[in-house]
Image 1 (cartoon, helix red, strand yellow):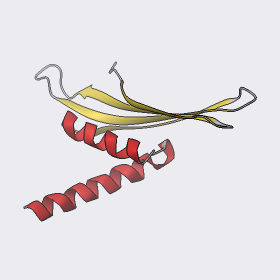
Image 2: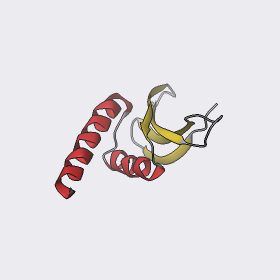
Image 3: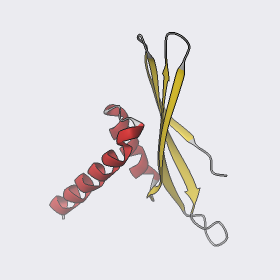
Length: 107
């Protein structure tokens, strides 16, 4: 089983308390032959209501990045925007397109 690394927690208290947890999911590509890793992303949104009711929404995308530094840069990007689980896929797609555009401009 792969471990999760909590990258950042954002908590907003109000009438509904919302906690956004951003995780990096490291995965071994092939442990038998080498120690290469890839990294996935997970966002967990927990909403706690006044009457003590609670909802949890989780979205995970595996194998997005092959460098931890790229993963951490992306995590900072989505945490700054307070990305929620329902928009994680869109955020990944937008980030990749922007990264490609930056690479083309610097080439």
